[in-house]
Image (cartoon, rainbow, N blue to C red):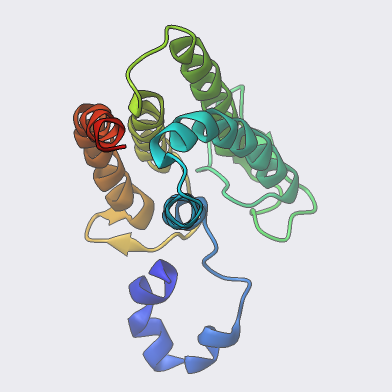
Length: 194
C-alpha cells in the first residue's frame, strides 16, 4: 500500500502500475503488516501480544538475514558502484546492472540482521521487562536500515531527500524508543486487570 501511495504521480501517468504486482513489495510492509495482524490475532485468541511480540522478533531478524541472501542471489536491492575490494559484479542479473562493481548491500544487510538476532537473543536471556526485546528490534533494525539505504542504488521511492525506507525507519526507531518505555507498563497493567 505504501508503494502505491508514494508512486501516486506515476500511477496517474500509467494506471496499469496498479496491476503490476512485481513492484513495491518491501520488507517494511511485511513487518508493519505482520505486527498489526499479529496484534489482531492475539486479541482474538486472548493471548498476550507483548509476550508474542518479544518471542517472534528475533526470529524475524533471522529470517530477514536469510531473505537478504536471497536478494543477493537475485541481484535486487543492490548497492552503488564502487572500486572497493569488497565490491561484487553481477553478470546475469535481471535487477542489478551487469558488469559493474557494486557495494554488496544485500550481504551488509544480511550480516546486520543476523547480528540483531544474536543481540536480541542474548538480551532476552537476561529476562528483561516485557516488550523490550521487540522494542530493541525496532530500534536496531530501523537504525541499520536507515544507514544501509545510503549505500543502495536501486530505485525505492523517496520522501523529500530521504528514501521511503529511511523515512519509515525514522518512525520505526521513534516507535521502538516509545514502546521500550511503554510496553512494560502496558503488560503490567494488563496482568493486574486479569
